[in-house]
Image 1: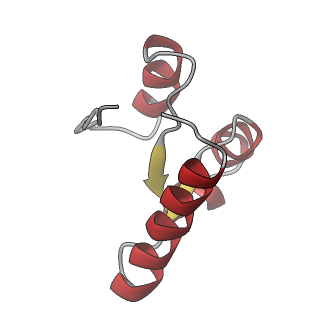
Image 2 (image 1 turned 180 degrees about the horizontal axis):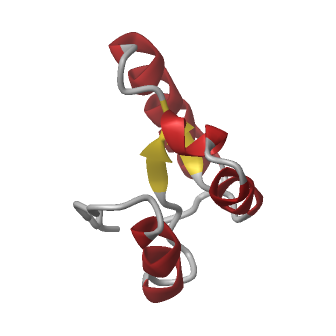
Length: 76
């Protein structure tokens, strides 16, 4: 298992990164992208996990929940 950290400069960079990273990876993006019209819809439909960076507890909860799901389904 590994983690890829990308510091993208624009909202559309995320869509390009989704095409480049391995198929079994799931990107995590800031929740603000969800409300950006077509980009938000495309991100949501492609399975991106959104975290709220302004609410630290909520972000930790989403990441912990994702980790538990990965462990339960034996996904590396």
